[in-house]
Amino acid sequence: MLALFVWIIVSILSIMLFKRVSGSLALTKPNLVSLVFYYSLFVSSYIGSLLIVLDIDHYYMINKLDHESSRYIGFAAVSFVMVFLPLTMLGVSKLANFNAKREFADYLKKPVANTFDQKNEFYLLFLGISIISMLAVAYTLLKTYQVPLFELLKGNFAELGKLRIDAARNFNGNVLIRNIFAIALTPLLSLIAYVYTVKTKQLKWFFLFLALFGSAILINIYDLAKSPIFFYIIMFIFVRIYIGKTVLTRGKIFALSAIGAVAIVFMYVFIQGVNDIEAFLSYSSGPIGRIILAQIAPTFLHFDIFGDSIPFLHGSSLPSIITGWFDVEQVRSARLVMANAFPNRIEDGTGGVLNTLFIAEAYANFGYLGVIIGTIYVGIFIQLLYIIFIRLPKNPIFLCLFIYFSINIPRTLVGGFADFLFNPIWLFITCLFVGMLLFIRFRLDLFAYFSKRKAAGNER
Image 1 (spheres, rainbow, N blue to C red):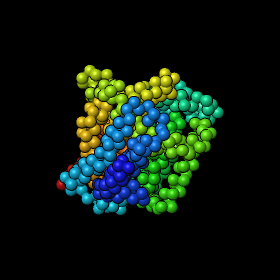
Image 2 (image 1 turned 120 degrees about the vertical axis):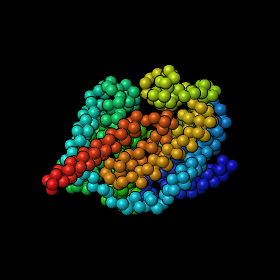
Image 3 (image 1 turned 90 degrees about the vertical axis):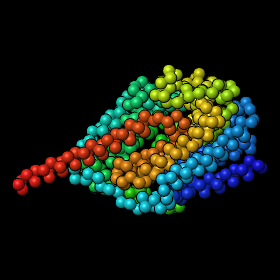
Image 4 (image 1 turned 45 degrees about the horizontal axis):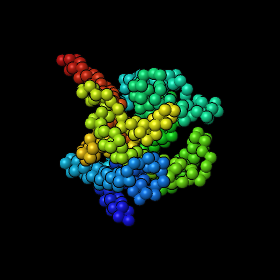
Protein backbone atom coordinates (compact mmCIF):
# COMPACT_ATOMS: atom_id res chain seq x y z
CA MET A 1 0.00 0.00 0.00
CA LEU A 2 2.99 2.31 0.52
CA ALA A 3 3.75 2.14 -3.22
CA LEU A 4 0.16 3.10 -4.04
CA PHE A 5 0.31 6.05 -1.63
CA VAL A 6 3.61 7.23 -3.16
CA TRP A 7 2.13 6.84 -6.65
CA ILE A 8 -0.89 9.00 -5.82
CA ILE A 9 1.17 11.75 -4.17
CA VAL A 10 3.73 11.81 -6.98
CA SER A 11 0.98 11.86 -9.63
CA ILE A 12 -0.76 14.84 -8.00
CA LEU A 13 2.51 16.74 -7.60
CA SER A 14 3.53 15.95 -11.18
CA ILE A 15 0.19 17.17 -12.55
CA MET A 16 0.53 20.45 -10.65
CA LEU A 17 4.09 21.02 -11.90
CA PHE A 18 3.39 20.08 -15.51
CA LYS A 19 0.34 22.35 -15.57
CA ARG A 20 2.55 25.27 -14.54
CA VAL A 21 5.29 24.62 -17.09
CA SER A 22 2.98 23.81 -20.02
CA GLY A 23 0.33 26.50 -19.65
CA SER A 24 -2.43 23.95 -20.14
CA LEU A 25 -2.95 20.26 -19.56
CA ALA A 26 -6.41 20.42 -21.13
CA LEU A 27 -6.86 17.71 -23.77
CA THR A 28 -8.64 20.28 -25.93
CA LYS A 29 -5.47 22.43 -26.05
CA PRO A 30 -2.60 19.96 -26.56
CA ASN A 31 1.01 21.08 -26.63
CA LEU A 32 4.54 19.69 -26.46
CA VAL A 33 4.74 19.61 -22.66
CA SER A 34 1.25 18.18 -22.11
CA LEU A 35 2.06 15.36 -24.54
CA VAL A 36 5.25 14.66 -22.59
CA PHE A 37 3.19 14.31 -19.43
CA TYR A 38 0.25 12.31 -20.81
CA TYR A 39 1.95 10.09 -23.39
CA SER A 40 5.59 9.68 -22.37
CA LEU A 41 5.24 9.68 -18.60
CA PHE A 42 1.80 9.05 -17.14
CA VAL A 43 0.23 6.60 -19.61
CA SER A 44 3.30 4.91 -21.10
CA SER A 45 5.40 4.85 -17.94
CA TYR A 46 3.82 5.56 -14.59
CA ILE A 47 0.65 3.46 -14.74
CA GLY A 48 2.68 0.40 -15.70
CA SER A 49 5.27 1.19 -13.03
CA LEU A 50 2.59 0.93 -10.35
CA LEU A 51 1.42 -2.45 -11.65
CA ILE A 52 5.01 -3.70 -11.72
CA VAL A 53 5.95 -2.55 -8.21
CA LEU A 54 2.73 -4.09 -6.85
CA ASP A 55 3.62 -7.33 -8.65
CA ILE A 56 0.28 -7.47 -10.45
CA ASP A 57 1.53 -6.68 -13.95
CA HIS A 58 1.61 -10.29 -15.24
CA TYR A 59 3.75 -9.03 -18.10
CA TYR A 60 6.06 -11.37 -19.98
CA MET A 61 9.04 -8.99 -19.94
CA ILE A 62 8.93 -8.51 -16.17
CA ASN A 63 9.07 -12.29 -15.77
CA LYS A 64 12.66 -11.96 -17.01
CA LEU A 65 13.77 -10.01 -13.92
CA ASP A 66 16.50 -11.74 -11.92
CA HIS A 67 16.10 -9.53 -8.85
CA GLU A 68 12.75 -8.62 -7.30
CA SER A 69 14.38 -5.48 -5.89
CA SER A 70 14.48 -4.13 -9.45
CA ARG A 71 10.72 -3.60 -9.20
CA TYR A 72 11.24 -1.06 -6.41
CA ILE A 73 14.34 0.53 -7.93
CA GLY A 74 12.59 1.04 -11.26
CA PHE A 75 9.49 2.48 -9.60
CA ALA A 76 11.60 4.90 -7.53
CA ALA A 77 13.50 6.01 -10.65
CA VAL A 78 10.33 6.69 -12.66
CA SER A 79 8.79 8.51 -9.65
CA PHE A 80 11.94 10.68 -9.55
CA VAL A 81 11.45 11.62 -13.22
CA MET A 82 7.75 12.40 -12.70
CA VAL A 83 8.70 15.11 -10.19
CA PHE A 84 12.17 16.35 -11.06
CA LEU A 85 11.68 16.60 -14.83
CA PRO A 86 8.90 19.23 -14.52
CA LEU A 87 10.70 20.80 -11.54
CA THR A 88 13.74 21.40 -13.78
CA MET A 89 11.45 22.77 -16.49
CA LEU A 90 9.91 25.15 -13.94
CA GLY A 91 13.38 26.43 -13.08
CA VAL A 92 14.05 27.14 -16.77
CA SER A 93 10.73 29.01 -17.04
CA LYS A 94 11.61 31.15 -14.04
CA LEU A 95 15.01 32.04 -15.50
CA ALA A 96 13.45 32.90 -18.88
CA ASN A 97 10.59 34.87 -17.27
CA PHE A 98 8.20 32.58 -19.16
CA ASN A 99 4.53 32.73 -18.22
CA ALA A 100 3.38 29.47 -19.78
CA LYS A 101 -0.35 29.98 -19.31
CA ARG A 102 -0.45 33.45 -20.85
CA GLU A 103 2.11 32.93 -23.61
CA PHE A 104 0.66 29.61 -24.79
CA ALA A 105 -2.85 31.11 -24.87
CA ASP A 106 -1.53 34.07 -26.89
CA TYR A 107 0.23 31.71 -29.28
CA LEU A 108 -2.99 29.82 -30.01
CA LYS A 109 -4.81 33.07 -30.79
CA LYS A 110 -2.00 34.53 -32.90
CA PRO A 111 -2.71 34.43 -36.67
CA VAL A 112 -0.31 32.60 -38.97
CA ALA A 113 2.01 34.97 -40.82
CA ASN A 114 1.67 34.47 -44.58
CA THR A 115 5.38 34.36 -45.34
CA PHE A 116 6.49 35.09 -48.92
CA ASP A 117 2.95 35.05 -50.29
CA GLN A 118 3.72 36.94 -53.48
CA LYS A 119 7.15 35.45 -54.19
CA ASN A 120 7.88 32.32 -56.24
CA GLU A 121 11.42 31.85 -54.91
CA PHE A 122 10.27 30.09 -51.78
CA TYR A 123 7.76 27.90 -53.61
CA LEU A 124 10.36 26.78 -56.16
CA LEU A 125 12.87 26.03 -53.40
CA PHE A 126 10.21 24.15 -51.43
CA LEU A 127 9.14 22.26 -54.57
CA GLY A 128 12.71 21.12 -55.18
CA ILE A 129 13.07 19.76 -51.65
CA SER A 130 9.64 18.13 -51.91
CA ILE A 131 10.62 16.30 -55.09
CA ILE A 132 13.78 15.05 -53.37
CA SER A 133 11.77 13.75 -50.42
CA MET A 134 9.21 12.00 -52.63
CA LEU A 135 12.02 10.39 -54.61
CA ALA A 136 13.47 9.27 -51.28
CA VAL A 137 10.17 7.53 -50.49
CA ALA A 138 10.34 5.69 -53.82
CA TYR A 139 14.00 4.86 -53.13
CA THR A 140 13.09 3.43 -49.72
CA LEU A 141 10.49 1.11 -51.24
CA LEU A 142 12.83 0.02 -54.04
CA LYS A 143 15.66 -0.75 -51.61
CA THR A 144 13.42 -2.74 -49.26
CA TYR A 145 13.69 -6.36 -50.39
CA GLN A 146 10.16 -7.24 -49.34
CA VAL A 147 7.86 -4.35 -48.46
CA PRO A 148 5.58 -5.54 -45.62
CA LEU A 149 2.64 -3.44 -46.88
CA PHE A 150 2.84 -4.99 -50.34
CA GLU A 151 3.13 -8.49 -48.85
CA LEU A 152 0.02 -7.81 -46.78
CA LEU A 153 -1.88 -6.70 -49.88
CA LYS A 154 -0.76 -9.92 -51.61
CA GLY A 155 -2.26 -11.91 -48.73
CA ASN A 156 1.08 -13.11 -47.34
CA PHE A 157 0.32 -13.01 -43.59
CA ALA A 158 2.75 -15.68 -42.37
CA GLU A 159 6.02 -13.71 -42.34
CA LEU A 160 4.79 -10.20 -41.52
CA GLY A 161 6.46 -10.06 -38.08
CA LYS A 162 9.87 -10.98 -39.50
CA LEU A 163 9.40 -8.76 -42.56
CA ARG A 164 8.77 -5.75 -40.31
CA ILE A 165 12.09 -6.33 -38.54
CA ASP A 166 13.88 -6.91 -41.85
CA ALA A 167 12.46 -3.69 -43.29
CA ALA A 168 13.98 -1.73 -40.41
CA ARG A 169 17.26 -3.56 -39.75
CA ASN A 170 18.18 -5.07 -43.15
CA PHE A 171 17.51 -2.10 -45.40
CA ASN A 172 19.60 -2.39 -48.58
CA GLY A 173 19.95 1.31 -49.28
CA ASN A 174 21.40 4.39 -47.62
CA VAL A 175 19.88 4.67 -44.14
CA LEU A 176 20.31 8.46 -44.00
CA ILE A 177 18.31 8.93 -47.20
CA ARG A 178 15.53 6.76 -45.78
CA ASN A 179 15.49 8.17 -42.25
CA ILE A 180 15.98 11.86 -43.05
CA PHE A 181 14.52 12.56 -46.49
CA ALA A 182 11.77 9.92 -46.61
CA ILE A 183 10.61 9.17 -43.07
CA ALA A 184 11.30 12.48 -41.31
CA LEU A 185 11.14 15.14 -44.02
CA THR A 186 8.15 14.03 -46.13
CA PRO A 187 5.49 14.25 -43.39
CA LEU A 188 6.86 17.61 -42.23
CA LEU A 189 6.82 19.00 -45.78
CA SER A 190 3.22 17.87 -46.19
CA LEU A 191 2.23 19.80 -43.05
CA ILE A 192 3.94 22.98 -44.28
CA ALA A 193 2.33 22.61 -47.71
CA TYR A 194 -1.06 22.17 -46.02
CA VAL A 195 -0.66 25.43 -44.05
CA TYR A 196 0.32 27.28 -47.22
CA THR A 197 -2.65 25.73 -49.04
CA VAL A 198 -5.06 26.95 -46.38
CA LYS A 199 -3.40 30.35 -46.12
CA THR A 200 -2.88 31.20 -49.79
CA LYS A 201 -5.68 29.11 -51.39
CA GLN A 202 -3.40 28.66 -54.40
CA LEU A 203 -3.72 25.55 -56.59
CA LYS A 204 0.05 25.09 -56.84
CA TRP A 205 0.23 24.57 -53.08
CA PHE A 206 -2.86 22.35 -53.10
CA PHE A 207 -1.50 19.91 -55.69
CA LEU A 208 1.90 19.84 -54.02
CA PHE A 209 0.21 19.09 -50.71
CA LEU A 210 -1.74 16.18 -52.25
CA ALA A 211 1.46 14.63 -53.62
CA LEU A 212 3.29 15.06 -50.32
CA PHE A 213 0.31 13.80 -48.31
CA GLY A 214 0.13 10.60 -50.36
CA SER A 215 3.88 10.07 -50.00
CA ALA A 216 3.71 10.72 -46.26
CA ILE A 217 0.92 8.18 -45.78
CA LEU A 218 2.87 5.59 -47.78
CA ILE A 219 6.13 6.02 -45.88
CA ASN A 220 4.27 5.85 -42.56
CA ILE A 221 2.59 2.53 -43.29
CA TYR A 222 4.99 0.72 -45.64
CA ASP A 223 6.55 -1.36 -42.85
CA LEU A 224 3.18 -1.91 -41.08
CA ALA A 225 4.39 -0.25 -37.88
CA LYS A 226 1.30 0.88 -35.99
CA SER A 227 2.45 4.08 -34.27
CA PRO A 228 3.86 6.26 -37.13
CA ILE A 229 0.54 6.71 -38.93
CA PHE A 230 -1.23 7.57 -35.67
CA PHE A 231 1.38 10.19 -34.80
CA TYR A 232 1.15 11.63 -38.31
CA ILE A 233 -2.61 12.04 -37.91
CA ILE A 234 -2.04 13.68 -34.52
CA MET A 235 0.36 16.15 -36.17
CA PHE A 236 -2.38 17.06 -38.63
CA ILE A 237 -4.83 17.62 -35.80
CA PHE A 238 -2.25 19.86 -34.11
CA VAL A 239 -1.82 21.88 -37.31
CA ARG A 240 -5.54 22.45 -37.67
CA ILE A 241 -5.85 23.48 -34.01
CA TYR A 242 -2.92 25.88 -34.17
CA ILE A 243 -4.12 27.59 -37.38
CA GLY A 244 -7.66 27.92 -36.02
CA LYS A 245 -9.35 25.42 -38.35
CA THR A 246 -10.31 22.92 -35.62
CA VAL A 247 -11.55 23.44 -32.10
CA LEU A 248 -11.31 20.28 -30.04
CA THR A 249 -14.23 19.37 -27.81
CA ARG A 250 -14.81 16.42 -25.52
CA GLY A 251 -17.13 14.94 -28.14
CA LYS A 252 -14.52 15.21 -30.87
CA ILE A 253 -11.85 13.70 -28.60
CA PHE A 254 -14.17 10.79 -27.81
CA ALA A 255 -14.96 10.26 -31.51
CA LEU A 256 -11.27 10.38 -32.51
CA SER A 257 -10.40 7.97 -29.70
CA ALA A 258 -13.12 5.56 -30.82
CA ILE A 259 -11.86 5.67 -34.43
CA GLY A 260 -8.31 5.07 -33.21
CA ALA A 261 -9.43 2.12 -31.09
CA VAL A 262 -11.21 0.54 -34.05
CA ALA A 263 -8.12 1.05 -36.21
CA ILE A 264 -5.92 -0.60 -33.57
CA VAL A 265 -8.26 -3.58 -33.36
CA PHE A 266 -8.18 -3.88 -37.15
CA MET A 267 -4.37 -3.82 -37.19
CA TYR A 268 -4.03 -6.44 -34.47
CA VAL A 269 -6.60 -8.77 -36.01
CA PHE A 270 -5.71 -8.53 -39.68
CA ILE A 271 -1.99 -7.74 -39.53
CA GLN A 272 -0.86 -9.68 -36.46
CA GLY A 273 -3.50 -12.40 -36.71
CA VAL A 274 -4.81 -12.04 -33.15
CA ASN A 275 -7.64 -14.48 -32.43
CA ASP A 276 -7.56 -14.79 -28.62
CA ILE A 277 -10.12 -12.20 -27.54
CA GLU A 278 -9.47 -12.67 -23.82
CA ALA A 279 -5.73 -12.05 -24.20
CA PHE A 280 -6.45 -9.17 -26.58
CA LEU A 281 -8.60 -7.37 -23.99
CA SER A 282 -6.35 -8.12 -21.00
CA TYR A 283 -4.54 -5.17 -19.37
CA SER A 284 -1.26 -7.09 -19.55
CA SER A 285 -1.41 -8.06 -23.23
CA GLY A 286 -2.84 -6.85 -26.53
CA PRO A 287 -3.07 -3.11 -27.22
CA ILE A 288 -3.65 -2.18 -23.55
CA GLY A 289 -0.49 -3.96 -22.45
CA ARG A 290 1.35 -2.43 -25.38
CA ILE A 291 0.38 1.04 -24.18
CA ILE A 292 0.85 0.85 -20.41
CA LEU A 293 3.51 -1.86 -19.99
CA ALA A 294 5.53 -2.44 -23.15
CA GLN A 295 7.28 0.96 -23.06
CA ILE A 296 8.19 0.92 -19.37
CA ALA A 297 8.99 -2.76 -18.75
CA PRO A 298 12.43 -2.50 -20.44
CA THR A 299 13.33 0.27 -17.97
CA PHE A 300 13.02 -2.23 -15.14
CA LEU A 301 15.08 -4.72 -17.18
CA HIS A 302 17.79 -2.08 -17.57
CA PHE A 303 17.99 -1.58 -13.81
CA ASP A 304 18.01 -5.35 -13.35
CA ILE A 305 20.68 -6.17 -15.92
CA PHE A 306 23.23 -3.33 -16.05
CA GLY A 307 25.76 -3.30 -13.26
CA ASP A 308 25.09 -7.01 -12.67
CA SER A 309 24.73 -9.21 -15.77
CA ILE A 310 26.19 -6.54 -18.06
CA PRO A 311 28.81 -3.94 -17.01
CA PHE A 312 27.89 -0.28 -17.28
CA LEU A 313 28.54 1.03 -20.79
CA HIS A 314 30.37 4.21 -19.71
CA GLY A 315 29.17 6.12 -22.77
CA SER A 316 29.28 3.35 -25.38
CA SER A 317 25.63 3.87 -26.35
CA LEU A 318 26.00 7.61 -26.88
CA PRO A 319 25.78 8.95 -30.46
CA SER A 320 28.48 7.67 -32.81
CA ILE A 321 29.79 11.20 -33.35
CA ILE A 322 30.70 11.22 -29.63
CA THR A 323 31.94 7.63 -29.27
CA GLY A 324 34.05 8.14 -32.40
CA TRP A 325 36.14 10.75 -30.61
CA PHE A 326 37.25 8.10 -28.13
CA ASP A 327 37.53 5.25 -30.65
CA VAL A 328 34.74 3.34 -28.88
CA GLU A 329 32.32 1.06 -30.71
CA GLN A 330 28.74 2.26 -30.35
CA VAL A 331 26.18 -0.17 -28.93
CA ARG A 332 22.65 0.71 -27.84
CA SER A 333 21.58 -0.51 -24.42
CA ALA A 334 18.11 -1.36 -25.76
CA ARG A 335 19.70 -3.90 -28.11
CA LEU A 336 21.78 -5.46 -25.35
CA VAL A 337 18.71 -5.84 -23.14
CA MET A 338 16.85 -7.57 -25.97
CA ALA A 339 19.77 -9.93 -26.52
CA ASN A 340 20.02 -10.68 -22.79
CA ALA A 341 16.30 -11.17 -22.11
CA PHE A 342 15.22 -12.70 -25.43
CA PRO A 343 18.24 -14.26 -27.18
CA ASN A 344 15.99 -16.55 -29.23
CA ARG A 345 14.34 -13.55 -30.86
CA ILE A 346 17.72 -12.18 -31.87
CA GLU A 347 18.64 -15.55 -33.39
CA ASP A 348 15.45 -15.94 -35.43
CA GLY A 349 15.54 -12.33 -36.64
CA THR A 350 12.30 -11.15 -35.00
CA GLY A 351 13.99 -9.14 -32.21
CA GLY A 352 15.01 -5.53 -32.64
CA VAL A 353 15.50 -3.24 -29.65
CA LEU A 354 13.63 -2.74 -26.38
CA ASN A 355 13.24 1.04 -26.42
CA THR A 356 12.04 2.56 -23.18
CA LEU A 357 12.06 5.67 -20.96
CA PHE A 358 15.20 7.77 -21.46
CA ILE A 359 16.53 7.23 -17.93
CA ALA A 360 17.11 3.54 -18.73
CA GLU A 361 19.82 4.31 -21.27
CA ALA A 362 21.25 7.01 -19.01
CA TYR A 363 21.47 4.44 -16.20
CA ALA A 364 22.99 1.79 -18.49
CA ASN A 365 25.83 4.20 -19.22
CA PHE A 366 26.46 6.06 -15.98
CA GLY A 367 24.43 4.40 -13.22
CA TYR A 368 22.26 6.44 -10.86
CA LEU A 369 24.27 9.59 -11.58
CA GLY A 370 23.15 9.23 -15.20
CA VAL A 371 19.51 9.12 -14.08
CA ILE A 372 19.88 12.37 -12.11
CA ILE A 373 21.93 14.32 -14.65
CA GLY A 374 19.95 12.90 -17.59
CA THR A 375 16.65 14.03 -16.06
CA ILE A 376 17.93 17.55 -15.45
CA TYR A 377 19.44 17.79 -18.94
CA VAL A 378 16.30 16.57 -20.71
CA GLY A 379 14.11 18.91 -18.64
CA ILE A 380 16.25 21.90 -19.66
CA PHE A 381 16.25 20.76 -23.30
CA ILE A 382 12.47 20.35 -23.55
CA GLN A 383 11.50 23.58 -21.81
CA LEU A 384 14.01 25.69 -23.72
CA LEU A 385 12.67 24.28 -26.98
CA TYR A 386 9.09 24.96 -25.87
CA ILE A 387 9.84 28.56 -24.90
CA ILE A 388 11.79 29.26 -28.10
CA PHE A 389 9.00 28.05 -30.40
CA ILE A 390 6.29 29.84 -28.41
CA ARG A 391 8.22 33.09 -28.83
CA LEU A 392 9.24 32.66 -32.49
CA PRO A 393 7.11 34.22 -35.25
CA LYS A 394 4.13 32.01 -36.05
CA ASN A 395 4.82 31.46 -39.74
CA PRO A 396 4.11 28.13 -41.54
CA ILE A 397 7.66 26.80 -41.17
CA PHE A 398 8.21 27.60 -37.49
CA LEU A 399 4.67 26.44 -36.71
CA CYS A 400 5.15 23.05 -38.38
CA LEU A 401 8.61 22.63 -36.86
CA PHE A 402 7.00 23.29 -33.47
CA ILE A 403 4.41 20.59 -34.15
CA TYR A 404 7.07 18.20 -35.46
CA PHE A 405 9.02 18.51 -32.21
CA SER A 406 5.82 18.43 -30.15
CA ILE A 407 5.21 14.92 -31.47
CA ASN A 408 8.77 13.64 -31.76
CA ILE A 409 10.11 14.79 -28.37
CA PRO A 410 7.53 12.71 -26.45
CA ARG A 411 8.28 9.72 -28.70
CA THR A 412 12.02 10.10 -28.16
CA LEU A 413 11.54 10.27 -24.37
CA VAL A 414 10.43 6.64 -24.49
CA GLY A 415 13.06 5.77 -27.09
CA GLY A 416 16.34 6.52 -25.36
CA PHE A 417 18.64 9.19 -23.98
CA ALA A 418 21.32 9.38 -26.69
CA ASP A 419 19.07 11.16 -29.19
CA PHE A 420 18.82 14.14 -26.84
CA LEU A 421 22.59 14.58 -26.96
CA PHE A 422 22.94 14.53 -30.73
CA ASN A 423 20.16 13.86 -33.21
CA PRO A 424 21.28 14.30 -36.82
CA ILE A 425 17.70 14.25 -38.12
CA TRP A 426 16.57 17.06 -35.82
CA LEU A 427 19.70 19.05 -36.58
CA PHE A 428 19.37 18.61 -40.35
CA ILE A 429 15.68 19.50 -40.47
CA THR A 430 16.14 22.59 -38.31
CA CYS A 431 19.13 23.85 -40.30
CA LEU A 432 17.37 23.12 -43.59
CA PHE A 433 14.26 25.16 -42.90
CA VAL A 434 15.96 27.96 -40.99
CA GLY A 435 18.46 28.13 -43.85
CA MET A 436 15.62 28.39 -46.37
CA LEU A 437 14.04 31.25 -44.45
CA LEU A 438 17.35 33.09 -44.12
CA PHE A 439 18.19 32.57 -47.81
CA ILE A 440 14.87 33.94 -49.03
CA ARG A 441 14.96 36.80 -46.54
CA PHE A 442 18.47 37.70 -47.67
CA ARG A 443 17.30 37.66 -51.30
CA LEU A 444 14.36 39.93 -50.49
CA ASP A 445 16.48 42.34 -48.44
CA LEU A 446 19.12 42.45 -51.18
CA PHE A 447 16.45 43.12 -53.81
CA ALA A 448 14.94 45.90 -51.69
CA TYR A 449 18.37 47.46 -51.18
CA PHE A 450 19.20 47.63 -54.90
CA SER A 451 15.67 48.84 -55.70
CA LYS A 452 16.17 51.77 -53.33
CA ARG A 453 19.59 52.50 -54.84
CA LYS A 454 18.09 52.46 -58.31
CA ALA A 455 15.21 54.70 -57.27
CA ALA A 456 17.61 57.17 -55.62
CA GLY A 457 19.73 57.23 -58.79
CA ASN A 458 16.71 57.96 -60.97
CA GLU A 459 15.72 60.87 -58.73
CA ARG A 460 19.17 62.38 -59.11
